[in-house]
Length: 468
Ligand code: ADP
Ligand code: GLC
Image 1 (cartoon, rainbow, N blue to C red):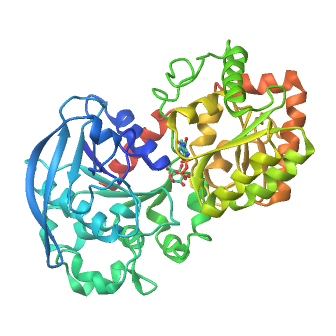
Image 2 (cartoon, helix red, strand yellow):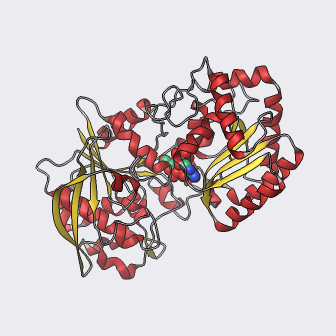
């Protein structure tokens, strides 16, 4: 079986969030002696593409409406990853120093067309085409409706929704940008008067997955306008919980952390990493360290952080350290808090992969008060690093974290994304930190929780077979 994943992000090439982690891991865990999983992604102007060398394996041109663009398919000269990865270089559109921006319609349309045009030249077509998020959402539609891709009509395709908040909407005025298709079915592109690539993919894909079972259920009532569509298509929709890549997120071998550790050496390992964080960010080693890592956007509840952090820090029981970037106003508010709470609070506004690993290792608690969380990888990394997750029970957080008040519980959960609930959850963490025996027991328990990819990778294979 040859599976082709098509995605805008893939770790370690280009990462904005969890999509990259998933697409950088899943193919590794799907591949075996009879299954080959490969990735097609855009060629961006970033550190990875600057630091590595590539060769061109295919060159052609594509049209988007009346405009003609040259494109190339590139491969790495050295085999750096555990799976084959192909890069679509549409230099005029895709080759930018960002992954997402305002002109994404033409950018990702060119990516999708180039990928399919190149696949048409293969001697043996793939057995499954697996699309990720709206950036590749027109592929299931084009496979089904575009004359050009008729040869692919019998190839099963799957859409994974990593985040239904973003749908790639564009105006019907731009419909001529899409390669010629059966215009009687133009309605498949539409949702609420706009071309909606995510909706088109939900309608046309043979199978649709979300990245956790709870998120699948939640989407039927809260999907940024797609609720009715997801309810109507529910018979082909499945929730498959993401895993984490234990080859990268492993406390024994992690080259980013200040001290590696095992279940046996967790106390010393976490202490050394916490000390590094406290020294570097001027925090109090004796107080529990609550951390947040992520995008500062409404979905993560970040607009509530300034007030929630202030309330908790005023009580004096906790340190808080934040790593993230996003909304300008939130960033500015978070910066301001540094003066008032010097010695117990700090924020690194930006993106830093190395620091994120040290924080997972050195923090005592990880905060995730998300309004929307399709899966969330951070809580799984934090579990794996012995850091207790403090989460709002939603989406994948609900599926992976059990409150300490329940049988076998190991995390701190709250019902709503509200300041008062975040504060109560932090208070509970502060209290748990004081009960050292229980606190250490939970740390040893969570580091052993199995969220590796093996089971979920197999679930996807079963899905491909079932829709074949
Ligand atoms: P999402 O994809 O919604 O942003 P996930 O929890 O699935 O959320 O994944 C986020 C990924 O991005 C994790 O690997 C996390 O460590 C990483 N990440 C997010 N923000 C930052 C940052 N500022 N610096 C480093 N890593 C980050
Ligand atoms: C999205 C979601 C996140 C999920 C990730 C990987 O970015 O916001 O919850 O973990 O995709 O599937």
